[in-house]
Image (tube, rainbow, N blue to C red; front, side, top):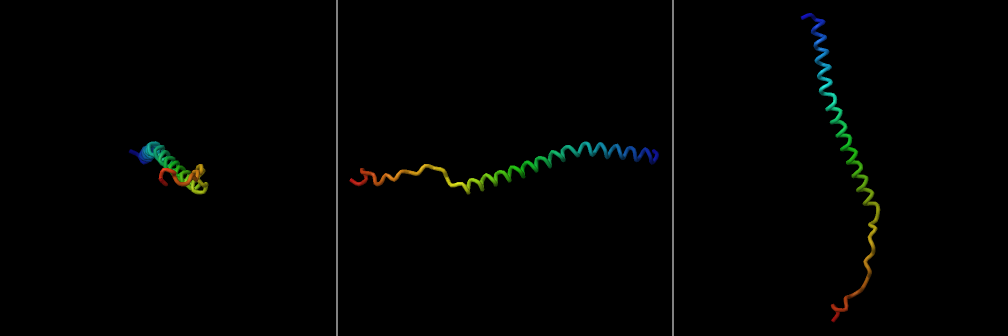
Length: 70
């Protein structure tokens, strides 16, 4: 095997390795980025809920129950 053939095979193996490894790595980084975005969005929603007062109807002040007074 000549040195040229050796380097050609080495280049072919490295290219094959890159084609096998690169797409899963890209997907992994995309998943990590999406998870970080979901975490940031959840933190924003929680902060927004804490800033907005509860929009609940007020309970009427009826007073004491007449049955309990007797």
